[in-house]
View 1 (cartoon, rainbow, N blue to C red):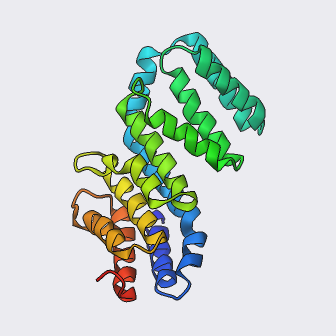
View 2 (tube, rainbow, N blue to C red):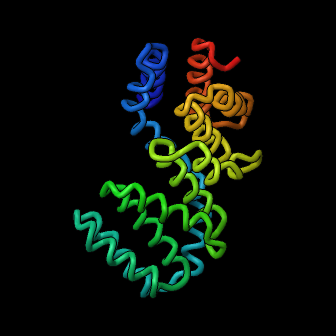
Length: 224
């Protein structure tokens, strides 16, 4: 059933992108695409993040983190943010950076995109955080910046992540391709999407979306 839904989604996006309403299609499908990317990125770092968390955390900070998560699940975002911010300052082991990530997600949920971007970006630059967590934070910042920032801002977050060998390279290339596409730089967008299409290790759903964008760019005649 999931395969059928995925194929139907891809076909529907393809039809939309081939129409004259590309910008409206992007607005329509953006939430689903971002959700898929977040799931992929989360899966790529889950094992490493858990091991890091389990090894370095203390039970007291863990209890506080779980309590803050519970506040968030009870639709008390302000209380949850306060709890995460306190844990950022006083927590031990891995919990401060995990609290920063979760607080940034809450900022995004509340509509504070500038605050969320700044928070994710700060984690991405934190040399004390594990590289996998830093890359995830950069990805989260970049995907928010596709809508609210410039191509250069997106590239500043994830161009290094797009390097071959990085497990998040395909997602980073997709973000860069979409950012270039949004500002009308079809040549650069084509280059990023083509890198995905040429990479045999790229996840199938990302490769499918890249091919849709390549077809649309070719149809536009603007990448020559």
